[in-house]
Image 1 (tube, rainbow, N blue to C red):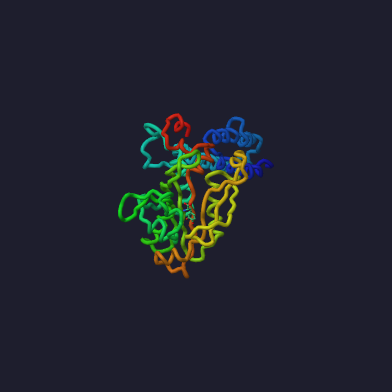
Image 2: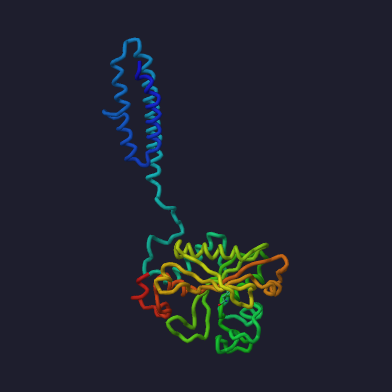
Length: 334
Ligand code: DAH
């Protein structure tokens, strides 16, 4: 009975193929190839006729058992695949309001901000918020910014006409202070928001623009963590060909301080080698002491970058003022 030895290996191969069928159509094809009229297993069964009377019962039993096993495997795989086909292709977001917006779309700055926030959320950052009308303490003093710093001058900053010298915040760094005043370390936040400066509008400056601030406080935090984080986020945002460079700089609330330069194919296309995109550094111990953190225990880094800059680069926009004109011909493109 030479062909009896073929039953077991043939059955194993058939089982493997059935279980591996990726969809229902393939499963039916596989079924045909084994147990259809011209199937390999059917061919085996046809050879039964060549056996002697004595041989037939044992062989029949073997073949029937194998056939039952194949049918069971086929039914199980079919059930699995039917279930799979009935499931939605993507996870369902039950909070989504509808399949598409009734009207309009998100502003390009909102889209870029959402993408940045999404990248930071992946690595455990939470979004914090603070007031746009600030006091000098949170905007400057608590950030170790001396009284003679140019940012404190009314030439550079919009002051409100009040006796307590309130102002429109010049950077989102003020929120670092507000968060640390309320929350004990560790801290891991980002702060997207609007800031104001007495910049005359030109193609790259506007009296109001948007920043994202980041603050990370824990024990044993290093510049290496900062570099790794910035690199991760920019790769998420702009693709894998991104390169980041840190240059020494000065900010009164960080020591050491750096400016971050960025480059990729888009920057090269603009005819530049690097584009400056952010300020950052290790939080100055004085800032920690001011908010009541023990600077011998806690270390941290902070950064701030301009959202418009990134959006301009990403969408190849050469005039910052286009973001604020609300010209539908411009906005429809995103
Ligand atoms: N606040 C700075 C600016 O507006 C940016 C900045 C620099 C933020 C260094 C930081 C930092 O948190 O550590 O230009």
